[in-house]
Image (cartoon, rainbow, N blue to C red; front, side, top):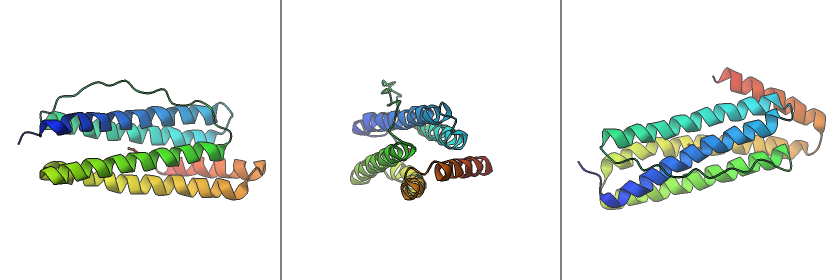
Length: 167
Ligand code: FEO
């Protein structure tokens, strides 16, 4: 069944948001790695790879349903943050924004009776819940330790071990 034309651009924009997330997390990884926070760096490298996989999943959906792919410009992410906490806060905010965009897309698919797209999008809704929770957990940990550098280094190590374990 052909996808209604009014959903073509929103789906392409969603793919672009995933590509931006990949680029954003790669930039965040560089923010940490350049300061020798290897654990947080590994964490964001892993998140960046996951976002790339999200984008590919959308791309394959477009191809499977003969929906045209529209290349769109990818915004340049910020490079610097005031602190590790500020960086995780920004990541959490972006995930919330992406979740909202999936809700909007899902609503449009449902209103139009696009049940295949609706079913496809539920995977992303679940994934967003996990990612928001993950960013929130790290944000809270960093919030608790404030400027205690020894504690931040301990969390950096923990983040690295967690990223390695989940590979
Ligand atoms: Fe795939 Fe977290 O956006």
